[in-house]
Image 1 (cartoon, helix red, strand yellow):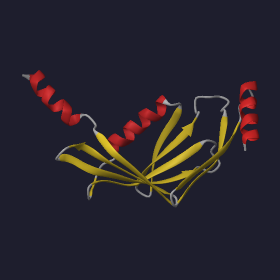
Image 2 (cartoon, rainbow, N blue to C red; image 1 turned 45 degrees about the vertical axis):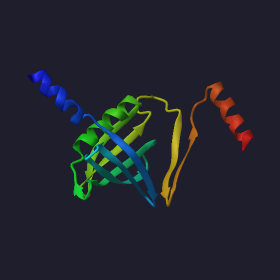
Image 3 (tube, rainbow, N blue to C red; image 1 turned 45 degrees about the horizontal axis):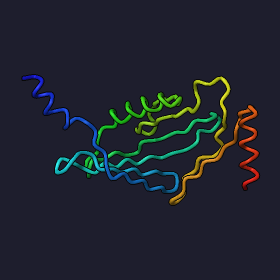
Image 4 (spheres, helix red, strand yellow; image 1 turned 90 degrees about the horizontal axis):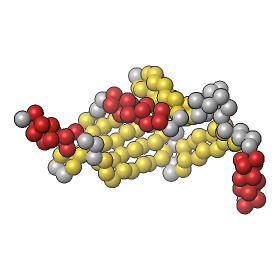
Length: 154
């Protein structure tokens, strides 16, 4: 009996995301997607303020200003936990804190390395444009050859 109930509930619990959308506005990122299937679906929207943290190398901050399922605000706890797990799998150290009542995720890139291979210098959002700039700190011969080729191509 318990197995039969689990089998029926499992499809309802699994994430089903579709129709993703991203809007880039000055200093904001709006992400939306359809969550669920058929008549048991809704549009989820997430409003993020994004910036490169001053005086902290390779740290990007994401402030979750709002999360909604349709017109209803939703709790961000499960999304925050999933974001942290995903970041850790990609050598990004996630740290959470609250700012103005909103959860903020700090993403520290290459946190596990004693010598990072790059330095982020710019992370800006403008209407429809995401601009990321940085430079390589990698001193291996392969890195120099690759950067020389890139400079010649420009």
